[in-house]
Length: 411
Image (cartoon, rainbow, N blue to C red; front, top):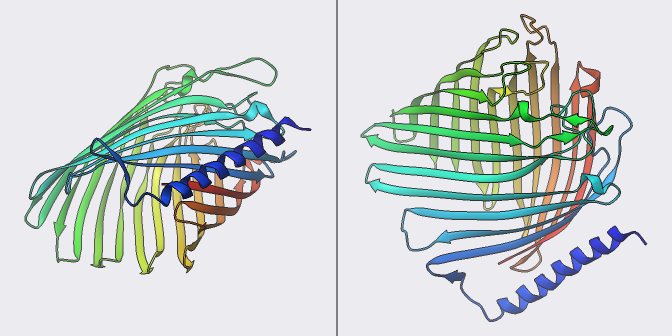
């Protein structure tokens, strides 16, 4: 019998054992798990997923079952009043039934804090480290050949901001740091798949100035200008500088409704003349409406310049729209419908001008997610989704259907 059968059975036996233990523990526990002034919220999620195109390939699609095991713990410091101190630790093991070469283990650690320095000011800081993997269908790893296994990389992220109110005016300077460090891989043929050209550091300072026109409405100017510096400048110097400069409005007529919209200009100038300078319009917006208890409508829109490490192009102007509707269907049962559309307009490459590297992708994804709280500590999960990428580059087109069932135990 397939050994993966025993892995799957073992995973769900583990989940059931933890669920039984948590239920028994819940009968004698009435408060949070705490020690030394910290509150601990551990959980474990185990799911079984089927994808009909795990490599997001335009042809010769390969289907597989994927078992995901994800333990995590949230840690909060209690007794801080309006101040906050939170930690999160999680790992995710992905196990492919038919292709063990695709297995990977991700890990993530994060800290988030807020310190109220006075009646009109606060400091926010967040940092995280993640060990992640680019799946073998990643077309930026190598546009001409598939890697023989997922490519691992380390991501370091930190951001900080200071907010201070001056009556009807407020200012929020901020800074964002991101570091990517990729492992080299191998092609299926055994040849080296060089990834050092993707290693980079992104540093982006910015600020927002707001004016409270009324109690419900504020006007703002938001801008940032940052650099993206690569460790290697061959075969192309991908270093660049650029920014985004927006004017917008924020309106919150009541506690359960928030609307924000902004528009303006953005640009990115690459060191290598082989890549076109990008100058275009930028935009962002969001809507959050809690229209019923535990039911919310969300809409997020953002137009930015994405970093593209495919050697053929400079950057991609990306328009990303994400909408979701979640609803309490019955006591202890919630459902969510989500829709995502993303346009990626690739610009310039190989010494071309005016975007002669003529690639444009239209990606959409629709999904249904449901969660049922069987007990206070045990949730049953389900998800179904369809994704499609349409492109004028034939090798970039694909579709993928995913079905997932799972369970989560959490204290």
